[in-house]
Length: 143
Image (tube, rainbow, N blue to C red; front, side, top):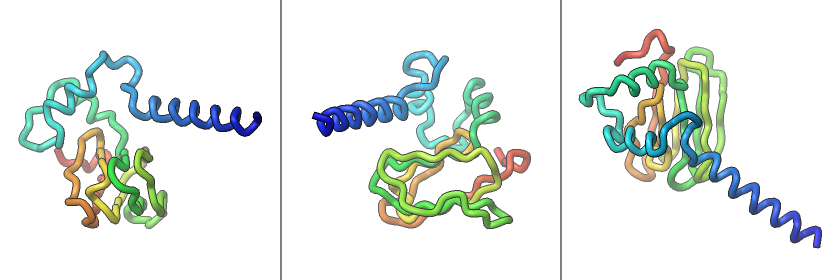
């Protein structure tokens, strides 16, 4: 009986975690995330940003990395000091967020991760290829 109760709690907790990771941020109108992604899914430089997207990018977190494919090894270090913030395998669905910059990011399988730098989605590598990204300090961003 106790095993079944523990299993039920584990399943409910897992569902709650998935819902929390995939839900829209509080205060965002329904469909806001889909609309922004549909306008410019890769955050290309030649696209004209909307006013709200520009405001979001200015205050966005320096780095968000999310595994959307196969589990992959990810290393995140502080550029200049070499301080290791993440080193190891991230599983499918796992995400990490970093509020400091500058950062150096390396993924063993760059096709498995979605990387957002200051709110802008970065191009992914072909599946299985190593990829690295640099997150500049906020004042030195180029846009």
